[in-house]
Image 1 (tube, rainbow, N blue to C red):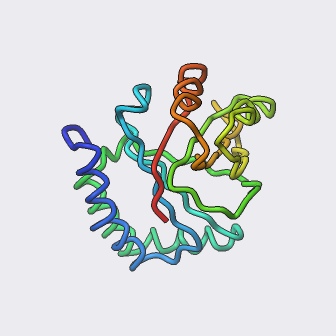
Image 2 (cartoon, rainbow, N blue to C red):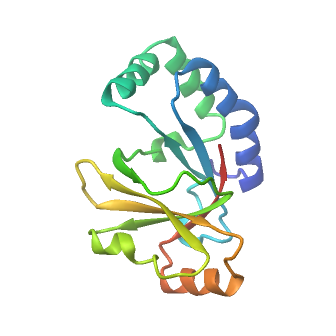
Image 3 (tube, one colour):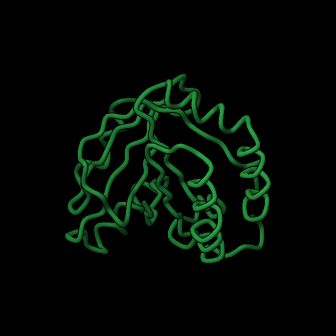
Length: 174
């Protein structure tokens, strides 16, 4: 939301919205990845990348029904308190999970084709978490998700973001 700092956005999301959503919906997996506007100048107003994981389309249908009920109305009313809702969008993907490790810091990289999903594989100190192929792709083919390990150097990350300015660096909350 315009005028809300990164810290204020994250604080509201974590202290108010995420607990509210978790109390109203049946999540199988719910993760928030906060985008630092200083580190990601191309994505200053992105705020977060929220990941909702479902084991099946039936599980996704359950959430759809819950969002069509009073629970959905309550969540939508809360979203306007800290989000620029008209700018929200979602991408439905089929994910190939490559590791079960959890990372506090991540990189998301959107790709136009299968080959571009591998562009960041050569950097030291990052580990691929998943390849997420977009269902009904329009502008992007998929999104590669990487974890930033303790072995990642600042030089490596600076080089990566200079070579690939569309890479999004985020901090993660499960």
